[in-house]
Image (tube, rainbow over all chains, first blue to last red; front, side, top):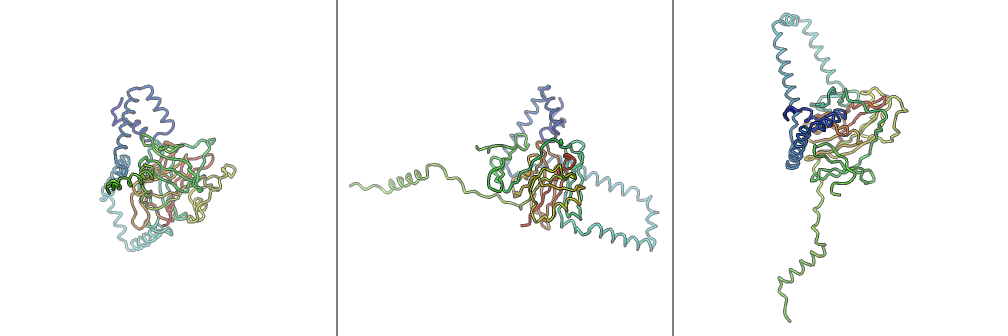
Length: 216
Length: 166
């Protein structure tokens, strides 16, 4: 058995980051490995215990976001480094920009590029933004951009498992909700005020839909 | 006749008032949690073949204009059907859930108001028990977020999240 810090599958299982197939395979693995099952139970109990004792309003930092921020910083440093290295070899190219006609053309190009970037959709301070994103699923990629024509910010997820065509996907119409922080449950109501469902979280922090309110 | 002492009378009146209250502690008055604003979230099925639509009659709120046309500029489909929708307060201190469907839904945590308007959010898109993406975002009124989700039938599921103007 791997030490807890190295068992990424166990952490992904606890965090709800596995696909259905991965989860089924991992749970099969746990059945065959009592030590792994024991470790999983211990970590789940620890997680539930911590969640119970931490104040509800305390923000727990996400390790995955921390990692993504480090990766972004590394990428920035690498980019800065790569910009500095070829400086000497580019000197001859920069000499070309000293030509007066090219300088004027460059100025026009910068203005046009700036206009296109700002565009009719306005500046970044006017529309919604995606600051960072993290996709825990293997093979899943997120890309983001602002579409000026739609005046919307797009977060595109590619590589997700398809929903089976014969699976029924149904929606609900929620008009209001009531949240009870003490029991970490939210009751959703329809337009007529009738309760539709109750959402809470299980010991591992995964969303849990209940038929009845936890207080009965 | 013996006169009852005032302390005894006070105790009796307290006992009577307690009995009238049924002896049960009164529930504290409901306090609405502080909020950062209100969002509208919807699960949308985009498809080219009208025969694949589910027949849902849900309508988008007026503040989004013609939502179909806006979606069509991003997603190459002819039909956009709202399967479910949810209007939800964003709580300042507690998590909020936007659940237009049990199949695909969103957990929202507020990170406070954003500069130049809007609200900073931590978003998690869930597909049943699996988190698809975790994201930090700034949501501003009039500028919805379109999240391209998994494929379904010959189309695609899309999540729309929009901040309502105060």
